[in-house]
Image 1 (cartoon, rainbow, N blue to C red):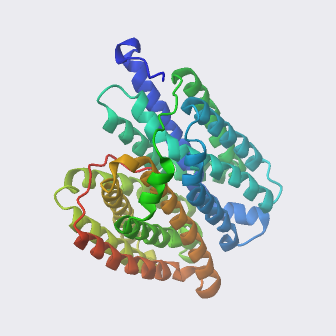
Image 2: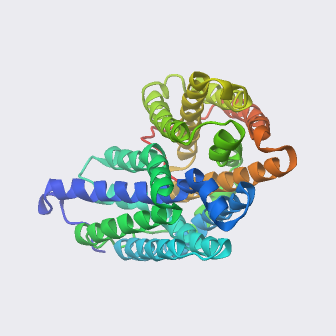
Image 3: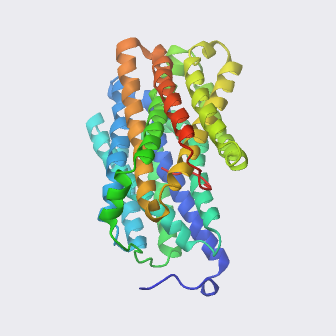
Length: 403
């Protein structure tokens, strides 16, 4: 089988550019997933529907990614990696083109389904591609770049998308994402070598082994609860702040930016403290998330309190995610692709469930109570996290998370 050319055959700066191109791809793909959060009110007003109805766009998108991540990984397991990535990016670009011309909410939903399928394939292959094209000994660097792309999507993608949507219309936000994807796809085409699939062995047997691992699925359940709780309130944070809280549009953008920056704080904390204080950080972050969402409505009266809650909440979410990722990777290193594909899928199932929980909460108890409902879900997660800590599973070193 053809391998990558030896390191001395390819200039080192080209190897770094390959990894950076994949990191920018991660930024674009995750920006596309997150950006509707900042445009929910605009899309709702354009189509004459409520934010809770628009939230179905988030739910269906996330559930498709969640359900299809593992099947798409298995279906495409023997396909040449560069070609598969280019096809995935092409589907992503075309789907965004349809998003910009959507004539009703149903047509927008169809275009987002196309993006979701591309997203499912992208995260099932990108980490392994990044590791293969990175300079020798730079595996952690490659994974960190992907994690940074994901983090920057929350830091810059959502507020930038919101600013574009506010000034030029929400359709233009999707158009800019599509055009950026077109540019980076061309870069990937020029930079990446051919990458034959490295799939070997009995994949079905590995899948069966993973699916019968009880500790692994307890950890997946904790991840599911964390993201269900988070997106139960975060999916509707824009209308919650502006319509219920009377917060200005500009400060709402600041809150979204702060939340993304808090994620970087959480990632940094984990890199320094995760090995020594793994269980304490994991339990503390679960408690912190629950308390922040519980206090969300009360914090609306003070911009300072709202900022503090945002920082703690954002850092706690990333800490929870990284703590669980470190532990699931330690379960079976020979099935890491399958485990991480499922991990990404579980995150997206949680995102979809959270958006649905938030939508139902708005319809049943009102927009102002989404924080209380989400906090109740997070509270259940605290007990699951404590149980995981008592299982004594030692985490593997993790550079960052992607989904």
